[in-house]
Image (tube, rainbow, N blue to C red):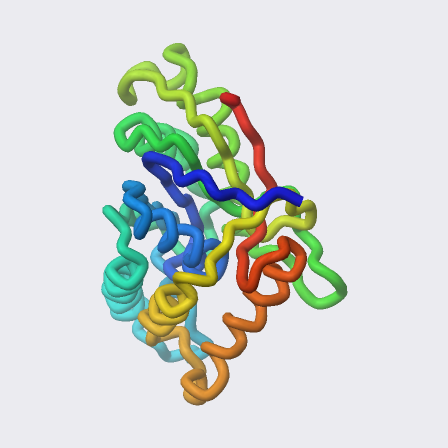
Length: 236
Ligand SMILES: [Zn+2]
């Protein structure tokens, strides 16, 4: 049971869909940003399939979701957002995904990278991890180690960079927790920025739901509110 209280100098969170970072690690990113870290987010897919309406204008939804990402980034205090713009639900058909992430790691030079745990597929008896979450998780693992750290992988994508710490969210094997009690309002505000994804009655329950989940994780870590991760350290 480790409470992670060191703040990375620079962090990069790599996720599949526009609202995934907020759900998975929004409090952690906000708390690092508030403590002076340079925090960037990468979003792999446009999120244009994030609607149950069969007649929806998917191009318009993609544009709206990009605006929502920007608003959420403001709420979290992020330094930058990088939209890869791939089709929703099809990240596994993108041949250059690993290279795109390597290029961003080498240009932004994060000390910590955060992404979904791709080994976590089946959650209880009611949820299967989205294929895009698994795909971007694997691509990020492979981009961090060994690709970005070796000059012989993707030699045209900038100088090699060794990420020190990888934090995996949505994991079945958490071993570190980040205290997010001071930034719960920012996490909730960032989730509410994704207006296209909110149920009509979200204002009645979403804030409480987020706080309850954070309290559940906080109990495991001995603090009031937390987010959980599985940690891999390449540099100690
Ligand atoms: Zn997602």
